[in-house]
Image (cartoon, rainbow, N blue to C red; front, side, top):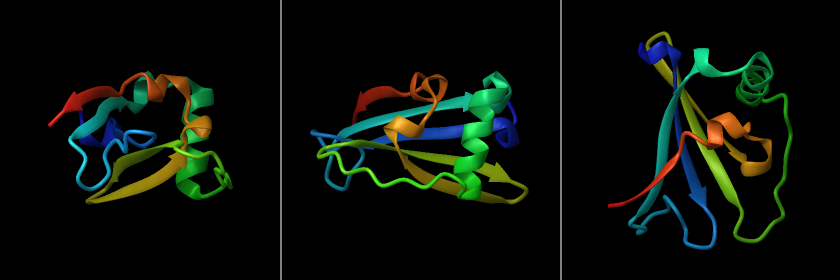
Length: 97
């Protein structure tokens, strides 16, 4: 799988503070862009373009940090769980570091 076709996904926050400084709990995964449906890819593209505006007011909410490679650089966004397609959420696995 080429890096240009890969989304690196991390779930952060929540009650246990997944992925936050000092936390030993991590939720990470990867998914190929080519595995996404056209609808899910459209949502991800809108998030990276900043075309979906959000404000999560939920206490202990999960956010997803998604990174993609464009040319020689990487782009990273963070968005609340409710905006992330289920196909992307499902690639994440919990690990203890």
